[in-house]
Image 1 (cartoon, helix red, strand yellow):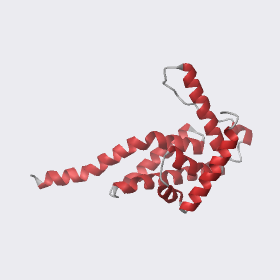
Image 2: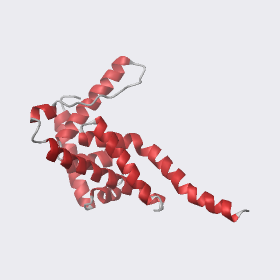
Image 3: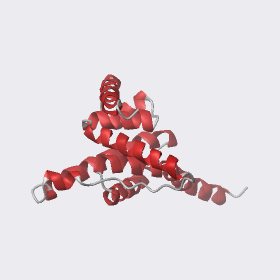
Image 4: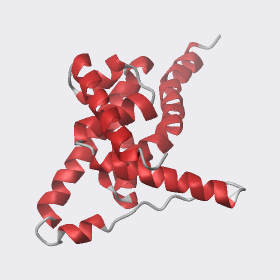
Length: 182
């Protein structure tokens, strides 16, 4: 067996695995960013930036990538929100900022079912927007992303107990907000 070929494979393997990792989280990361930023363009930029920054950690063990990527993405979302507030907050009214909405493409075959799905997602995303940031993050990471409590705590930079508290409060608030929708 050629040692140089084995070394070359070892060097290229993390990049290929990282590409697979990106492919597996791309859609979920975009939805997470879009909920936090309420802008498709900003969400695309943030996800791309998070993936680019993640390339610097390709040498880290694969089992650390999930928490690391979501931590980077969350930080980029917060940075973008701060920049937007600072730069544009004084130039636009609150009414103009509230007018932004999500436009989800749907390739489903049944129009009524697709409409119901879009309505449900629109209602859920609106309810999530009304939650405090930490509750929205805890709900999204634990429920929608199905991360465990320890990973969620690591991503959010808080204790596992705080994650459980934020999640409990988020579920209670969402249940109240979505009662009439059921």
